[in-house]
Length: 95
Image 1: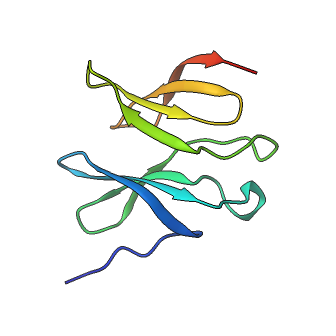
Image 2: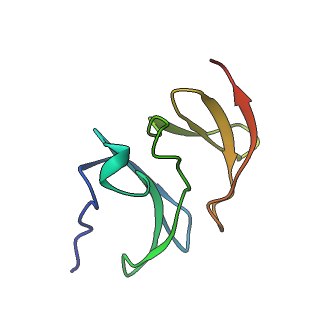
């Protein structure tokens, strides 16, 4: 049995997508790596990492809405997350 090892810190949330898992890590410093939100396949190989500007805050939450869309949150707002590509769309800035 393989055990998923976090890339940066601790795994805060893990969402099963059927073909893998979307991972959100907590306590993350953007200067240490590309992103604290990424997807791995069933063998825990990285499929994608959500793009982050190192000057912006890390992602801090991910939820599944009633319409089955994945929504991510960072310190500036929220966006829809495509679970297949990691692409972030429909940003709503709150700050």
